[in-house]
Structures are given as structure tokens and as C-alpha cells.
Amino acid sequence: MCRPVTTLARITVGTLAVALVARSVTAVAREQTRSATRAEGAIREAYAPLPGVRLFYRDSGGSGVAVVFMHPNTGTSQIFEKQLSTFAGAGYRAIAFDRRGWGRTQIDSAGPQPGTAADDLLALMDSLAIRQFHLVGSAAGGFVAWDFALSYPERLRSVVVANSIGGVQDDDFVKLGAELRPPEFNALPAHVRELSPAYRAADRAGARRWLEIERGARSGGAGEAAGRGRAPAAQPLKNPLTFAALQRITRPVLLLTGGADMYAPPAVTRMFLQHVKHAEFVVVPDAGHATSWEQPDAFNRAVLAFVKKH
Image (cartoon, rainbow, N blue to C red):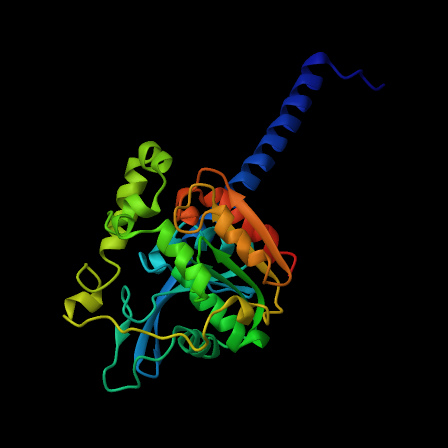
């Protein structure tokens, strides 16, 4: 005769089922944590021996499509520490390097100088066997992004130019820049010019970290180039940058800036929309000239959404 299942038995079975589910959920959570830790800890630092330079770079590795970050003049590849692990975790190969005259890159005076940042980027990609990639340039890194897009468009999947006046040399645009940024503005400390007041007030530790990177970025700071007592290499662009030249760019472009950017305010960035084909435009409210640093979540979301389409 079969006996009916007792209440105690039903409770025991139910408790066991809940325990198994809880254990499964815990295992998944632990694996997610381990995956996140691997992504954050996977950034490799290395030097690429290239003509005239040992180029220092950071690289998440992996088989994903590459996204390369070009730093501003007030930083090095360190400035993208809030991007590299996030993009790697999203399945991309995230790379950033120190341009000649910045950070830990070492100039070989016996080799050809000064070269161009666009050619250094090309040589780095060739050395890493990367054929096509997304290029993200911040501030003066945006100048290099435009220059590379004009020089080697076949190597790019897309271009992101963030918080940048683009290096455009049209007379009217240069005059506008002089009006927006008079000598008194340029005499202000870098963190006052580039970090929004809202960010400096809300995240004092973050502002100090940004300033630490800025002070060590070039000769006269704490970088390796400074330790050798040489002036940084002045790398020219390969192309004259004008609005007419930018009309030749055919790759998809994202223009991004901060609502509180005093170098490239939204009204200035919108001027590029009249000349750059296939361009999208994003403004991150309240962010200053260092949007990727001040509001990394908003910056990362916007850039990831864009590159996923291309």
C-alpha cells in the first residue's frame, strides 16, 4: 500500500528544491563575479618596438573587434582606465597607447623623428595583426582620429571624436576659438579648464586622480620622458584639417561632447555635423571636457551603442 506523502516530507522536498535553486543562483553569481574580475584584470601593459619609438600600450587582448582609444594632451593611456575593462567585458579588444612625448612611451633619437601619431597607430595595429578597428579620440586625440580617418580609411570600422575642436584650421573657426578661449582662459589650471565645476565638487578624489595623471603626462611631470630630460616630440598631422577635408570621411562617425565642455561646447560640436557625413551627435549633460572620466557610464553606453552598429 502506498502511503500519502506527509507534510514533513513535502516541506523537506520543497526545502531541498529551494536550496538547489539558491545554490545554482549563487554559482551563476560567482561565475559572473569571476568573469568581471577576469575582464578587469586582463589589461596587459607592453611596449611595441616601432621605427623611432618604443610605444607603450595597454591591451585587453582577446578575439573581439578592436576599439582603440587616443588620449588627450592632458593625459595618457591611463585616462581610459574607466573604459578599457568595460569594453573588454562587452566583448571588445580594448587598446590605448601613449603617444610620442607622453607617458611611458620611449623615443629612440637614433630612429626617424618625429613621425606622426597616425603612422604610429598604423604601425601598432600592424604589429598586433589588427586589420580593422573602431577609433575613439578624446580632445586632441580627436585630431589624430580625423587625421587617421583621412589617411587610412580602409582600416577603420567607425570613428568617435569626443570633446574635441578637431584641429580644424578654417579661419572663422580659429577666430571663434580665440573668442571662446582668450589668454585668460588658457592661463587657468588644467583641471579648472577641463573638469566641470559639478564634477570637481562632487568627486574630489576623482578630480585629484585626474590631476595626478595630467601632471605626469608630459615632460616636466612624472612621466618617463620627463625623467630623461628631453622635450616631447612635436608630431605633425599628415593632413591639413579643414571642414572641407572632413567632408571626405566616409566611415560612420559619432560626435560626443559634454554639456559643460568649455573647449567644445555643444554649439561648437554641432558645426561639424554640417560637414561630416554619416555623423551622429550625443551630448552628455553637465559633463566637462573630460566626459569619459567624469561620466564614464554615460560615455561608455553611448560609445558601445554606436560601435555595436558598425
